[in-house]
Image (cartoon, rainbow over all chains, first blue to last red; front, side, top):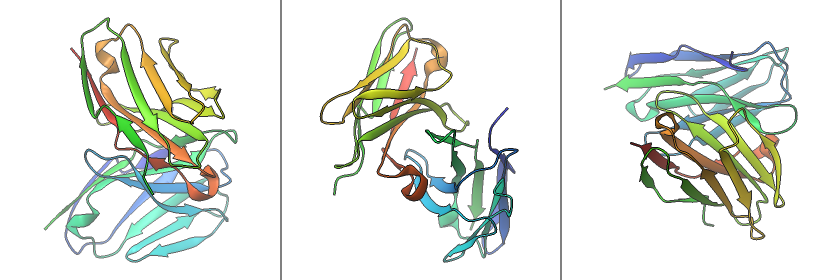
Length: 110
Length: 113
């Protein structure tokens, strides 16, 4: 069982559409992070959310941390082919290393 | 500022052999983390080194081991390679993982044949 469950596992949409991906856990996290990974590269940090209920915007990307700090969502407005990649959420485990979800693989078709 | 560097980029080994993967963290980062990413899967935590000491390890057999050198670079060793060890091995370093997250290298693609 994954500590962090991400859904959907795969998502294929047309350019210009909106989408939301989710990251859920039964555990409370002090913070959650979102990364994007492109083929042949390591993941790149997009955002860190720390406060329950927090909303952060990064251009067309909106990140939300659940009030109970057990879940997070990533919403992309007007998706573009450049948004294609594997989106990973991660959180600190027992104040040690970071644990990652299995990711959502997004494909945006032109 | 140089990022996290990993070598080699690709490595092909025969089942039963040993593999050694290397990682240099960002200057000033004392912690190095190793993750395994099998095809189509997420990142599985392998090892965490800080200040030359192993701080934590994931649910992997003892044939996965490593070390951190005085300059904070790190080595991951995989002994008695098995076919299922084929994966992308990612190294990351961090100044403060909770606030600034990890900076990852591009990984070493290990193929066991």
